[in-house]
Length: 447
Image (cartoon, rainbow, N blue to C red):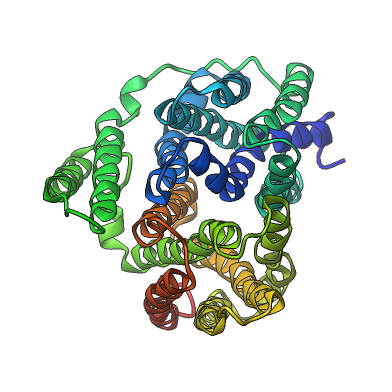
């Protein structure tokens, strides 16, 4: 029993089955990109939009859905999100063209983005005793589904084809929805205040980030300066408008005043940019250059995604004793070492050496994720925790979006050792910057 709430354990299970859908679907696509690329005759740059569109929709969707949850009731939004995921998952396999598939991915992201904020709202409201224990259990659902996503996706695609990664959602959706009907507390009477949602800011954010992605992808051929101009103008207008909003999509005024918090967000963007370059890039490399099957690729990817499970507890103990700075520095250095070692993997190298490098990179993730989150909370007021957590998620999405753009820029017609090493060289520069940001972070909250 987690608390006095009579159905607390089942409540956590119900929410966990729903919230795992977002990380599961964002990670399974890693091993499916190559197969979908062949199916629709795409370049890797085109196929990389399967990654970008999901994170872009998630980045815009989570803050909106969090506010809608307060207005219409957490249970209603949770169950609506499950239905949206179900609709997107049944339509996606029958997509007649790639744009339709992208639309289904966006819809899937919006639906799954509804589940986390509404689920957290119910946990914080109805589980008041040992709440941290409940949150830890929910964290296991999300981290495990993200870690095993490539392996699950590889098995499904090897057994059938890429549509299987959409159909696998239905057991989770059906079970979570059925439990939600009877377990989740309802009866909330929210106040509908759509003016609280910064639709203008969200639209400008989507336009600006989309223009940035299009500009980056144009660097390989004819540079599209129009998209660059749209990106710059969009950023300026977004910044000006957000400073004047009472309830902005992103509180840029607070970010400007709190330098430490702003740099933590930048650091998390870079951490995820580097990590997802490998998370999404290596499956394509393993299939297209090393000619491993999609099933074998999924198993190999477990060495990268699953390694963080072993270092996260170590990072937690270090944080308890010395604060967030030391494990954050360690994580950045390990990521730099793993990225540098990737340059030593060549045509004559055994697969075991690549797996070893992937494990090292995976170790860094265990340090970086929990340390960055702790570093953020050390430099924000308790009453701002919710907003700060939302921006941290946004930083993760931005890093993933930029990684897919970088991969689309480097992995053009074919994926070779030379291109993999180019990615590593670029990521080394980011890693050096990460080490510098980690070293400059104050040891304790200066307030």
